[in-house]
Amino acid sequence: MASPIRILTAVPICDGHDSAINTINLEFIRHGIEVIYLGYHRSVGDIVRAAIQEDVRAIGISSYNGGHIEFFAEVVDLLRKRGVSDIKVFGGGGGTITHEDAAAMRRKGVDQIFFAGTSLVEMTDYVRKNYGKQRMKRAPAKSPDIELARKLTEIEDKYGNTKSSMSKRQRRKHRTSNIEHRTARVVGFTGPGGAGKTTLIDELVLRFLNQNPKGRIAILSHDPSVVGEGALLGDRATMINSQDDRVFMRSMATRGQAGGLSPATHDCLALLAQSNFDYVIIETVGTGQEAMPFRKNGIVDLTVLVMNPDYGSRLQLQKIVMLDLADIVVVNKSDLQRARTAHSEIEQRLEQNRRDQRLIDTVAKRHRDPGVDRLFDLICGSEQSQRGKARNKS
Ligand code: B12
Ligand SMILES: Nc1nc2c(ncn2[C@@H]2O[C@H](COP(=O)(O)OP(=O)(O)OP(=O)(O)O)[C@@H](O)[C@H]2O)c(=O)[nH]1
Ligand SMILES: [Mg+2]
Image (cartoon, rainbow, N blue to C red; front, side, top):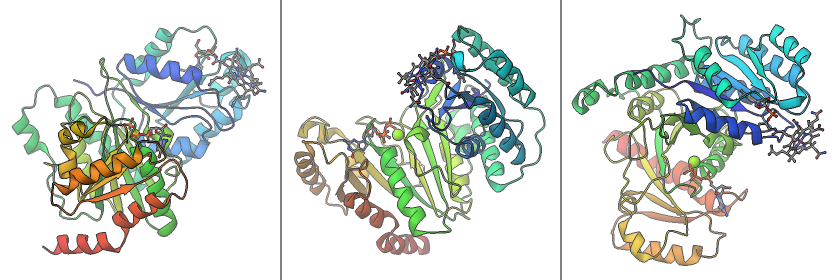
């Protein structure tokens, strides 16, 4: 079975017209395409960096601000400069892009422009026909990030192509188990959908970048595949601080696997853990009560469960398996009314475990939140470095 087509979509800088691209994204994913959505008001540099890290087949840009001729051309030029001109550019923008403009854009290297009135089916067919074929032999990677991105694609494709035919045992054998040369500390974030995992990670990344002027961090983020096997990989749209050359982010779809991760996660994580990052952060999809995504694979050093204060009642807390397993439990959205009650109920629940678990309240969407500072210290501070060193020695 061939892997799904992966494309990146975005709206240019100084443009907030995201309604069209949201509709188009949905249509693409319904037809089996994996869409990494970068959001609106995005610069050329951010778009090209994301396209490289995600190793997409093409970039779809939706532009209404009038600057389309220059903007599309700059994206094509930067892709060329970075040595990845096999990543193609296409897009649209209703009545703002004229036929003459489109002809000029094509001359500058843009593949295709879609005009007002084009049906969604036509656009989906175009993507499948033009970006669905096996890639030709690729030019050698011009940077370590390009090389890493391509290796991650190879791993994903390996699982994509063999998913239906490989038994569990074969898959285990297939796994990259050699992680002796790991350089990174791996931190796993999980929790219910919408609890604020991505917002929190982005705030932690900001603190990391400020504290370590030369440090690098990787993020492996998961979103669910939908029926039809496409996926909207939307965490990048929330990640503002993580749009930085010192952050390598990769979005993965679960591709039919339950439990919050993808069949290829273990191998991708193993590769990232030995690729010269200081930290590798992994975010699961929004999980349910029974989920324990990090228990078996053994690469994750520290697990963080991010809770929403609106989980229900004490009874629901008894059923959340990760409350027994997480090293750190975060009550995010502490600005909400129920947060105080949530804190004390979860505190009591954790006391029953008699383990050294930490409970922290955060407001991830607030800048300079003291709770997020505390979480950062726990994860990246001296306490964890000492624990990490002790673990590495043993
Ligand atoms: C809806 C709309 C809004 C909404 C936006 C809601 C949102 N979140 O997107 C609101 C009301 C908020 C808005 C605000 C503004 N808008 Co407005 N808006 C429009 C409008 C009416 C429709 C755009 C749209 O979504 N169409 C629906 C899509 C699905 O259809 P389509 O555009 O025809 O696109 C087709 C193809 O091009 C293709 N396509 C489009 N994108 C992509 C991408 C890919 C990858 C692919 C494959 C295909 C594709 O898909 C469609 C297929 O049929 C246009 C007018 C117009 N006719 O374009 C003005 C328009 C774009 N807006 C305009 C302006 C000026 C503004 C404001 C500056 C107004 C103001 N003074 O405040 C603000 C700026 C907002 C901002 N932050 O950027 C101008 C832009 C003029 C220009 N560039 O020279 C326009 C053209 C209206 C006009 N005639 O003056 N706007
Ligand atoms: N009130 C409040 N809202 C927050 C806070 N943190 C995040 N949010 C909002 O919660 C919504 C979901 O945030 P995300 O960071 O995308 O949540 P997530 O857990 O990564 O979501 P999934 O990946 O879809 O499971 C967004 O609208 C955020 O702005 C917070 O501390 N307080
Ligand atoms: Mg998220």
